Image 1 (cartoon, rainbow, N blue to C red):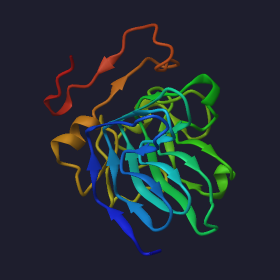
Image 2: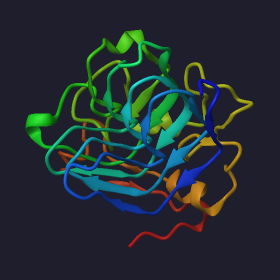
Image 3: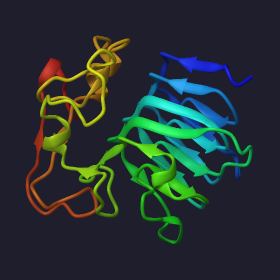
Length: 219
């Protein structure tokens, strides 16, 4: 029903889709209802539509969610939040207060502007995206107003439009959802590595910094 919800959950495992299967960190498809206060830290791979939160969004609302995991597609569209957006049900369709800091691997032929959040869409982003951002250094392929530096996203300041009653903002960490903010998983996946100014995951030329907050060890 339109009132169906997936709330307050996260995924930190691995999904390896078989040929052309659509895979998302929280759900393969959202046709109606809402996904709220969920996040993905898992590894999502395959050759169908892939998304950090959902693979395909046909209608419904995704709010206060984030992707910190890896989305790896060898053949088709992939997005940090949703792989493919198409309002086939002609109902409410919104993605709001979501961000992506995870690694993206997308075939060049499918690497559309905005894939850091949405792999592909048949409607204009400004019709359904509200207060959504991505780390242009760890996730970015393209520059846009929605792309922020790692230092900006981990400054401890609230992102525009994000409710401090829902999110936790800590200097040196990416924003976390209060419902899971103090779990080991959330602390681990919010711990950044910081590239030099002007560099991104496709272009690393100088030394970078890794955070050791919360006793995180890098290998």
